[in-house]
Amino acid sequence: MKILTLAVVFVLLAFNSNATKYKFIATDSSIETEMCVIAGNNNKDGLKKALRLGMMGSAINSKRFTVNSVTCNDMVMAHFAHKYDALDTFSYLNHFTSKKDKIPTTSVEIKDIAAVFNQKNEETKIIYVGSAK
Image (cartoon, rainbow, N blue to C red; front, side, top):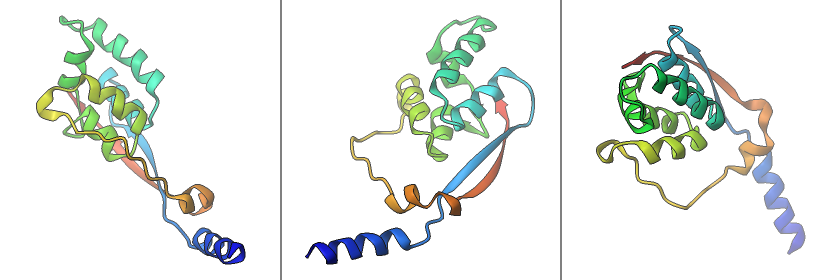
């Protein structure tokens, strides 16, 4: 029974997986576009810092206002992070996102173990990022 279980695990790990990595390229040098790139790269600490910098130039100094007023490639920042599997920044941004744009979250997490062990087959997609405020 143990041998059968090990054989199944090895067979599952042997299959090629096509995990996708994303490389984000800013189309301009604005702080809003930088926030979008940071959100897509799943850099929660960098996003917090960028949000503080973004609020400094705004008449309304609130994270909620900044998160809801900046769009990344015509998407709310939380949707952008969610689309590109940046789960840490998504959960942070979704907290500040207005109710009409909020994405419901659940506590279920499924990890593709084949993708975790088969890093060399990753495909990198380049995403050009622009923001609108």
